[in-house]
Image 1 (cartoon, one colour):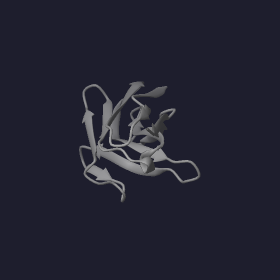
Image 2 (cartoon, rainbow, N blue to C red; image 1 turned 60 degrees about the vertical axis):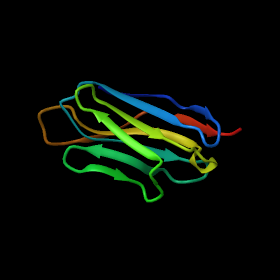
Image 3 (tube, one colour; image 1 turned 180 degrees about the vertical axis):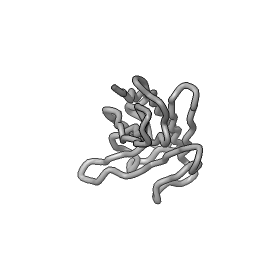
Image 4 (cartoon, rainbow, N blue to C red; image 1 turned 90 degrees about the vertical axis):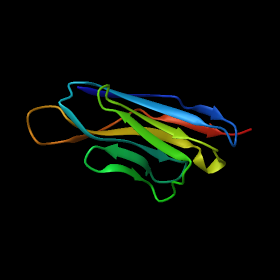
Length: 121
């Protein structure tokens, strides 16, 4: 069994910064990709950023230099830092990882429970 546990969401003022962390635990053989998605009210879930050894970093089309993703491969953690937050960044942010849990070649998608980010003064 695999768990992704997120932390770091909450209320942030416009122009402020945010750091989201996610830790994967459980029966993990290998993690291919770790990343963050977000879903604003009434909208579809969208990729924010992801990171892997083979592909490097990938970002959603809306992402500017305000977003940074990093990963600790030894600790199975991924961190998203966002600067200069704006109202349109408000959403539930979800951690995602493609994880192999046995000797097969199959990687399965796992999701965290989501962490709410609210941007308001």
